[in-house]
Figure 1 (tube, rainbow, N blue to C red):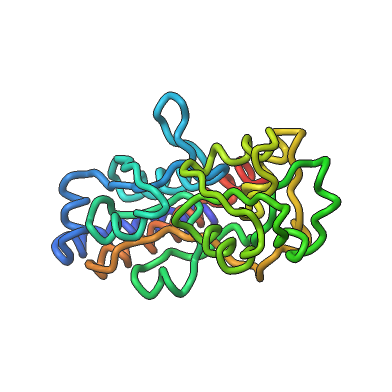
Figure 2 (figure 1 turned 135 degrees about the vertical axis):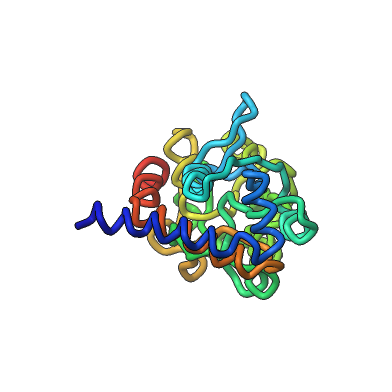
Length: 258
């Protein structure tokens, strides 16, 4: 039964694409060129990271490439940054943004976002030998604590709103901050559950603090889409549902998030 269900889902998406091929300009362009442009900062493990070889890998990369395959198109990656993520999407530099993007009202009021995944909360990445001294947000919000943030995302917003008494500095490359913490060049990196867990497992000098009781209510991540073509958004939603039914989301979770 599962085989037949997937067969008819695949048939349905093919019919859907055929029916909407002339409906919207973005969808038309993607289906005619056979290319979907995927924007990502590429600096957020384990969701999307640009390797030293210039390739991209991670949870979101697996999922978006499976979606592209379901649509019958190829992926073209476009480098962006957290400060420029929203304006680059709205400037039509790419068709979908991925890479560990928090779903929130500020973003959904401007763009569309696909269903949430990877529930998380804000946590702290700290040195293991200092972890015991951080038991509350008040312990982080001290003049003696040096917090390193990356610009342009919700982690920066959290730091600026909640850690006003701490020493705060900015480092442009998010993926380099954990090593700075481990080397003692900073004390705290505010990030999300999965990134903190990844780096604490990768580097024995680091610890993920507040995992069981995050500093914020639980939220989810999501892919961002422009809202200039309703048919494109609808087809991308269908592609997401299709790869979910094909267990791509479960496989990506098993590979990258556990």
